[in-house]
Amino acid sequence: MGLFSSFCIHTFMKTLAEAYQKWDAPVISLMAATGASPFGVLVATLLSLRTKDEVTEAAARRLLARADTPEAMRALGEETIRELIFPVGFYPTKARRLVEICGILMEKHGSRVPDSMEALLELPGVGRKTANLVLVEGYGIPAICVDTHVHRISNRLGYVRTQTPEQTEMALRERLPLEYWASYNEMLVAFGQVLCRPLSPWCSRCPVAHMCPRIGVERSR
Picture 1 (cartoon, rainbow, N blue to C red):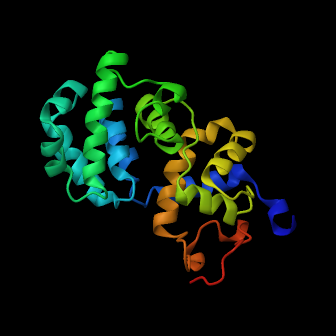
Picture 2: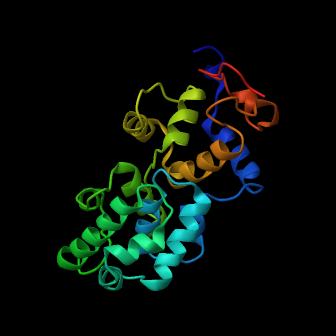
């Protein structure tokens, strides 16, 4: 496996954790750390899809300030929700799904966001990435949330060799020590936003560059 044969996940995570102190937390982690409920985490995560963090945070806080329970949000109605969450990506679809989800939470879960993968995946618009993030940030349950950053960086390091985010999640479940499940997404998302960019990553500034074989990197800074 060449350079990767000397890779140590414990050293990698420790080094990244030290660097992370200087970076902005991803928006969902930030909201969870500042008191968002599991419902707030679910709402913010749904809004974050295909949307920049700063837009997500502003929209989520506007919406949750008006309605922080399924009952209150459903009562707002789809049109008001659309206005409150604009300009997040696909805001009409997200407004409709939020109303649907609130109804399901009220009717099937006693207005509580479920804390199991199976139940979360039954909610419209909720995939494994969203479900895992709700488990981690909403309930503190160890889970591996794989978004584009986690998928890209895990493969760039050679820690996994996968083609899709779901394959990456399953590979990480087999390999990543349980102690890092909850923090892996949070730190790699921040790392991916600041340094380990999709194109031309900042390898010259990277605190873990000496551990990385840079698989697939054609140009760096």
